[in-house]
Length: 174
Image (tube, rainbow, N blue to C red; front, top):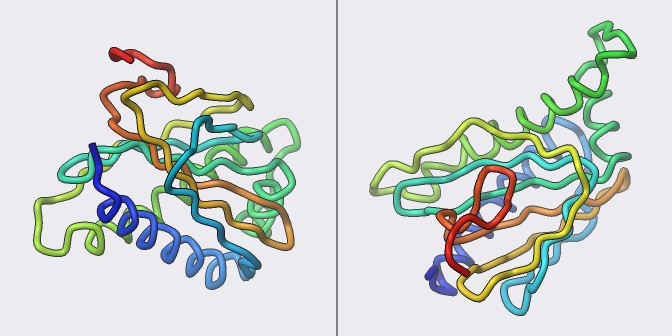
Protein backbone atom coordinates (compact mmCIF):
# COMPACT_ATOMS: atom_id res chain seq x y z
CA UNK A 1 0.00 0.00 0.00
CA UNK A 2 1.16 3.51 -0.77
CA UNK A 3 1.66 5.75 2.23
CA UNK A 4 -0.12 9.07 2.52
CA UNK A 5 3.25 10.82 2.15
CA UNK A 6 4.06 8.91 -1.08
CA UNK A 7 0.63 9.70 -2.46
CA UNK A 8 0.90 13.39 -1.63
CA UNK A 9 4.31 13.66 -3.29
CA UNK A 10 3.13 11.97 -6.49
CA UNK A 11 -0.05 14.06 -6.61
CA UNK A 12 1.91 17.28 -6.02
CA UNK A 13 4.53 16.53 -8.69
CA UNK A 14 2.01 15.48 -11.36
CA UNK A 15 -0.45 18.31 -10.66
CA UNK A 16 2.33 20.92 -10.68
CA UNK A 17 3.72 19.61 -13.97
CA UNK A 18 0.22 19.49 -15.46
CA UNK A 19 -0.56 23.07 -14.47
CA UNK A 20 2.73 24.29 -15.96
CA UNK A 21 2.08 22.39 -19.19
CA UNK A 22 -1.42 23.79 -19.58
CA UNK A 23 -0.23 27.34 -18.93
CA UNK A 24 2.86 27.27 -21.14
CA UNK A 25 1.89 24.94 -23.99
CA UNK A 26 -1.89 25.39 -24.25
CA UNK A 27 -2.09 28.92 -22.76
CA UNK A 28 -4.88 27.73 -20.54
CA UNK A 29 -5.11 28.85 -16.92
CA UNK A 30 -6.04 26.38 -14.22
CA UNK A 31 -8.69 28.16 -12.15
CA UNK A 32 -9.02 25.62 -9.37
CA UNK A 33 -7.28 22.45 -8.18
CA UNK A 34 -8.86 20.07 -5.69
CA UNK A 35 -7.09 17.10 -4.10
CA UNK A 36 -8.92 14.00 -2.88
CA UNK A 37 -6.66 11.65 -0.93
CA UNK A 38 -9.14 9.79 1.20
CA UNK A 39 -12.60 8.34 0.94
CA UNK A 40 -12.49 8.08 -2.89
CA UNK A 41 -14.80 5.12 -3.43
CA UNK A 42 -15.31 5.39 -7.18
CA UNK A 43 -13.74 6.92 -10.26
CA UNK A 44 -15.96 8.39 -12.95
CA UNK A 45 -14.14 8.39 -16.26
CA UNK A 46 -15.12 11.24 -18.53
CA UNK A 47 -15.48 11.40 -22.32
CA UNK A 48 -11.83 10.53 -23.09
CA UNK A 49 -9.25 9.04 -20.74
CA UNK A 50 -5.53 8.53 -21.30
CA UNK A 51 -4.01 5.83 -19.08
CA UNK A 52 -0.36 5.15 -18.31
CA UNK A 53 1.38 2.66 -16.03
CA UNK A 54 4.22 3.93 -13.84
CA UNK A 55 6.71 1.32 -12.70
CA UNK A 56 9.83 1.35 -10.59
CA UNK A 57 9.27 2.59 -7.06
CA UNK A 58 5.92 4.21 -8.00
CA UNK A 59 3.80 1.22 -9.15
CA UNK A 60 0.52 2.90 -10.07
CA UNK A 61 -1.77 3.61 -12.96
CA UNK A 62 -2.17 7.27 -13.78
CA UNK A 63 -5.16 8.42 -15.84
CA UNK A 64 -6.06 11.82 -17.29
CA UNK A 65 -9.80 11.96 -17.89
CA UNK A 66 -11.12 14.85 -20.01
CA UNK A 67 -14.52 16.40 -20.56
CA UNK A 68 -15.33 16.48 -24.26
CA UNK A 69 -15.28 20.28 -24.48
CA UNK A 70 -11.82 20.51 -22.90
CA UNK A 71 -10.07 17.84 -24.98
CA UNK A 72 -11.63 19.34 -28.12
CA UNK A 73 -10.26 22.77 -27.15
CA UNK A 74 -6.77 21.35 -26.50
CA UNK A 75 -6.93 19.42 -29.79
CA UNK A 76 -7.75 22.65 -31.66
CA UNK A 77 -4.76 24.40 -30.07
CA UNK A 78 -2.48 21.44 -30.81
CA UNK A 79 -3.52 21.19 -34.46
CA UNK A 80 -4.22 24.84 -35.31
CA UNK A 81 -1.77 24.85 -38.23
CA UNK A 82 -2.62 21.35 -39.50
CA UNK A 83 -5.51 20.53 -41.81
CA UNK A 84 -7.19 17.43 -40.39
CA UNK A 85 -10.13 15.83 -42.18
CA UNK A 86 -13.33 15.85 -40.13
CA UNK A 87 -13.58 12.05 -40.20
CA UNK A 88 -10.16 11.76 -38.50
CA UNK A 89 -10.67 14.31 -35.71
CA UNK A 90 -11.74 11.76 -33.09
CA UNK A 91 -8.58 9.76 -33.71
CA UNK A 92 -6.41 12.87 -33.40
CA UNK A 93 -8.19 13.98 -30.24
CA UNK A 94 -7.35 10.60 -28.71
CA UNK A 95 -3.73 10.96 -29.82
CA UNK A 96 -3.65 14.44 -28.29
CA UNK A 97 -4.75 12.98 -24.93
CA UNK A 98 -1.97 10.39 -25.21
CA UNK A 99 0.61 13.06 -26.06
CA UNK A 100 -0.37 15.15 -23.06
CA UNK A 101 0.09 12.39 -20.48
CA UNK A 102 3.31 11.27 -22.19
CA UNK A 103 4.86 14.74 -22.10
CA UNK A 104 3.79 15.64 -18.56
CA UNK A 105 4.60 12.35 -16.88
CA UNK A 106 7.79 11.93 -18.89
CA UNK A 107 8.97 15.31 -17.64
CA UNK A 108 7.96 14.43 -14.06
CA UNK A 109 9.93 11.18 -13.75
CA UNK A 110 13.04 12.89 -12.38
CA UNK A 111 10.94 14.68 -9.76
CA UNK A 112 9.24 11.42 -8.76
CA UNK A 113 12.50 9.59 -8.11
CA UNK A 114 15.41 12.05 -8.00
CA UNK A 115 17.92 9.55 -6.60
CA UNK A 116 16.58 6.41 -8.29
CA UNK A 117 15.39 3.86 -9.03
CA UNK A 118 14.28 4.67 -12.54
CA UNK A 119 10.53 5.28 -13.00
CA UNK A 120 9.37 3.34 -16.03
CA UNK A 121 6.40 4.38 -18.17
CA UNK A 122 4.11 2.38 -20.41
CA UNK A 123 2.85 3.84 -23.67
CA UNK A 124 -0.48 5.64 -23.14
CA UNK A 125 -3.69 3.71 -23.67
CA UNK A 126 -6.84 5.59 -24.61
CA UNK A 127 -10.24 4.72 -23.12
CA UNK A 128 -13.03 6.27 -25.16
CA UNK A 129 -15.95 5.51 -22.93
CA UNK A 130 -17.34 7.18 -19.89
CA UNK A 131 -17.58 4.62 -17.10
CA UNK A 132 -17.41 4.25 -13.36
CA UNK A 133 -14.93 2.12 -11.45
CA UNK A 134 -15.89 1.24 -7.89
CA UNK A 135 -12.98 0.80 -5.51
CA UNK A 136 -12.43 -2.73 -4.28
CA UNK A 137 -11.17 -3.50 -0.80
CA UNK A 138 -7.44 -3.62 -1.64
CA UNK A 139 -7.40 -0.78 -4.16
CA UNK A 140 -6.43 2.83 -3.51
CA UNK A 141 -7.88 5.71 -5.52
CA UNK A 142 -6.71 9.31 -5.35
CA UNK A 143 -7.91 12.20 -7.49
CA UNK A 144 -6.82 15.66 -8.54
CA UNK A 145 -9.56 17.70 -10.20
CA UNK A 146 -8.48 20.65 -12.33
CA UNK A 147 -10.92 23.27 -13.52
CA UNK A 148 -10.18 25.54 -16.47
CA UNK A 149 -12.20 28.04 -18.45
CA UNK A 150 -12.65 25.35 -21.11
CA UNK A 151 -13.72 22.49 -18.88
CA UNK A 152 -12.75 20.10 -16.13
CA UNK A 153 -10.52 17.07 -16.08
CA UNK A 154 -9.39 14.62 -13.47
CA UNK A 155 -6.06 13.02 -12.80
CA UNK A 156 -6.61 9.62 -11.23
CA UNK A 157 -3.97 7.76 -9.26
CA UNK A 158 -4.84 4.06 -9.05
CA UNK A 159 -2.93 1.52 -6.96
CA UNK A 160 -1.78 -1.13 -6.83
CA UNK A 161 -1.65 -1.47 -10.59
CA UNK A 162 -1.56 -5.28 -10.34
CA UNK A 163 -5.28 -5.26 -9.50
CA UNK A 164 -6.25 -3.81 -12.91
CA UNK A 165 -5.86 -4.40 -16.61
CA UNK A 166 -5.15 -1.67 -19.14
CA UNK A 167 -8.86 -0.82 -19.39
CA UNK A 168 -9.11 -0.41 -15.60
CA UNK A 169 -11.07 -3.62 -15.16
CA UNK A 170 -10.28 -5.60 -12.01
CA UNK A 171 -8.08 -8.65 -12.61
CA UNK A 172 -6.63 -9.24 -9.13
CA UNK A 173 -8.19 -10.40 -5.94
CA UNK A 174 -10.42 -7.78 -4.42
